[in-house]
Image 1 (cartoon, rainbow, N blue to C red):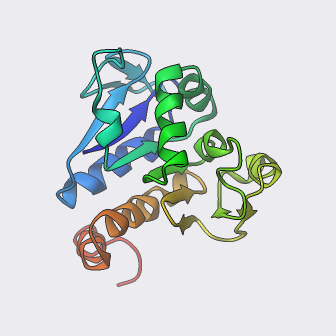
Image 2: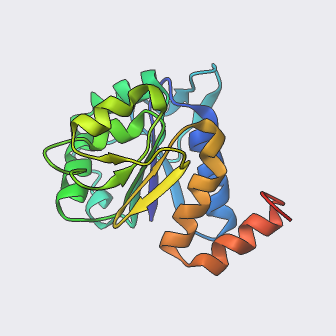
Length: 187
């Protein structure tokens, strides 16, 4: 199971395009409302999450195939306030389990040495947060895959970010099939 975490202020396309592409690829994906059952995007779009709470009774994070963190500065700040989520991110990073983050969200991966020496991208305005954490910011790339971590630059890279996740979880052929079916990119 793949979990996409939504908090009030999330960047709409960075979350929903990813969910759409993963589901097209047949990857079981659930949205998790970190700030409630109905989460409002940065552009005022209300979204009803598949899972509406992260309490002590909810335990599937340890067995997740991937944790996905969409951007949106307000949304990322709200994700950071969720201790249970941040503990799951720390556990995933420390145990080299798959994590994907886009736009402002890669800054949540800048914990103690987690990105040191790794290639990564984020929104260019936040680049210093990654480089200060020891990441090697990859100029000009919209998506970077480095071992178990996938990072994306910004909203305009959402489809490519999602396709990189499909390739990571399945294979390049699955990602290419979705890309072609969506008529994304060069023909």
